[in-house]
Image (cartoon, rainbow, N blue to C red; front, side, top):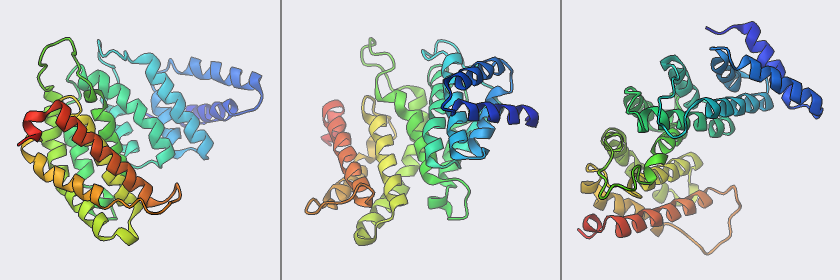
Length: 294
C-alpha cells in the first residue's frame, strides 16, 4: 500500500540529493538509508521513478532503487532475492511503459532480481509467460494503441538473457543448456523470430524511410539472439538457424558505407544490427559448428 505522506517525504529527500550543497546531500542520503529499512520503501521509489515531478527526481529514485536492490539481493544467486511478487509485478508494468532514460536504470533492478530468482533458483514461474504476453501485445506488434512499448519489452528480454551469454557452470564439461534458457527460447525467442522476419523485411524494403523504433527493435532482438547462442544452443533454435541466417544476411546486405551519417541517424542503428549479426555468425561458427554447417 502506497503511503502518500512517505512518498512525498522520499521525493523531497531525493530532490535534496541533487543539491549542490554536500551537507544537504549527505543528510538526505542518511535519511533515505534510514527509510530504506521499511518494507514499502522499494514500492515508493518505484512509484516516484515512474511518476515523479521531474526527470531528475525520477532518475534519482530509479538509481536509489537500483543501489538498494544491489545491497539487498545476493548477486551470486546463492539465495533467493526475497522480493515480493507484488513488487515484481509492479516493476514489470513500469518497465514496459517508462521512458528510455528511466528504463536503462530500472532494467538493472530487474536483472538483479531475475538473476537471483529465475536464473539461479528457478523461481518466478510467471516471468516468461508474462514477458511473452507483453512482447506479443506491445505497440509495434499488436497495434499502436497498446500501452506496452515493444522496445522496452525487448530490453527486458535482453536483460533476462544476459546471464546466459556465459556458461553458468563453466567447470562442468559439456554443460547442458539450462532449462530456463530452453524455456525462454521455446516460449519467446522462436515466436519472436516471425516478428523479426517481418521487421527486417519492412526495414530493408523502406530503406529510404527507415523507422527508428523498428530499427531499435531489430537491434535489440539481435542482441537477445546473440546472448542466447553465444555459449549455448537451445534445442528449439537449432532447427530454424537457416531462416534466421537469411534475415541476418538481409540486414548485412542492406548496409551502406558510402556516406557519413549523424549519430542520431537511424542507419547507425542498422549498422549496429549488422555488427551484432556478425557476432551471431561468429558464435555459430566457433561454438556451434555442427549446427551451422548443416
